[in-house]
Amino acid sequence: DIQMTQSPSSLSASVGDRVTITCRASQGISNYLAWFQQKPGKAPKSLIYAASSLQSGVPSKFSGSGSGTDFTLTISSLQPDDFATYYCQQYNSYPRTFGQGTRLEIK
Amino acid sequence: EVKLVESGGGLVRPGGSLRLSCAASGFTFSNYWMSWVRQAPGKGLEWVANIKQDGSEKYYVDSVKGRFTISSDNAKNSLYLQMNSLRAEDTAVYYCVRGGGSLGYWGQGTLVTVSS
Image 1 (cartoon, rainbow over the protein chains, first blue to last red):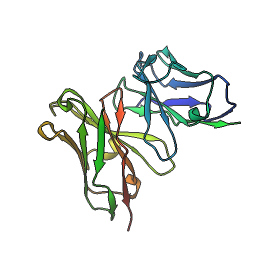
Image 2 (image 1 turned 60 degrees about the vertical axis):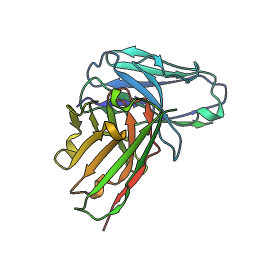
Image 3 (image 1 turned 45 degrees about the vertical axis):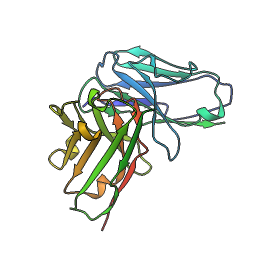
Image 4 (image 1 turned 30 degrees about the horizontal axis):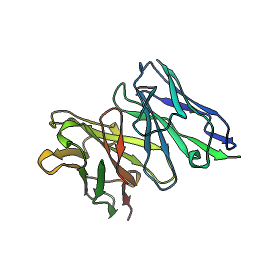
């Protein structure tokens, strides 16, 4: 199975900050990488697929990059609504696997 | 508007069975792979299974192989998950998701609790 490791596991930031979350795959996954946002008690929401493609309706403040084993999610100009948990997920092979999540908190 | 509505969750004893359903609307169901993803209380996301549009391919995480069966009915725009021999570690919110790789749209989830 491909292991997905996110860093950091938690992150404190202020409104207006720009933050970057990293996701590393245990083996190469080309660009078969997605990012999700989840708020407490809610279903995850798809943000990015194919490592860097924005899902319809997702604001351009979210951006993704990377290929192979190393990927990043960048969120610019943080707003209160952005504080949530973020997950990466690989879909290069079975079983599909998720990172452990990064909790983004308000400083 | 894409809508996925899960049902069928509840409390079940270890070793019992449960069948989850997902009613899909707002898109052409027969054009998409569909998946189930679960989340244990306070934990991260775990992919469970997916199924190809015509049902010809199905994949499962090892921990549910031989116990869970994914199926779909294109005439009813519905996805199912038959869960047998349930264990305490199957306790989770189960999400119905559109997509087989990239998971674009998620339902609100249904809670399955396995406890005596």
